[in-house]
Image (cartoon, rainbow, N blue to C red; front, side, top):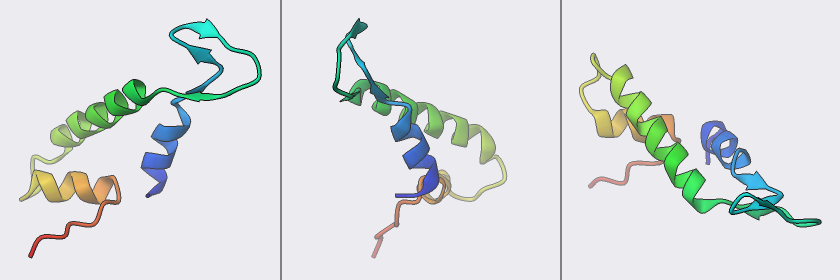
Length: 69
């Protein structure tokens, strides 16, 4: 996992569940994480006007190895 994904992950830990404060435990909001990943991909789309492959650009930006054979 690259630093960008880790930074997105850190934004998803909270002491709140469905907006309600929960004492003593952190909870991971998977919906928020998915939304942040999608937003990152949308942002990347706007940055790829000169890139030959949107897929490669997004995978590289998120630090995901492309296992095409």
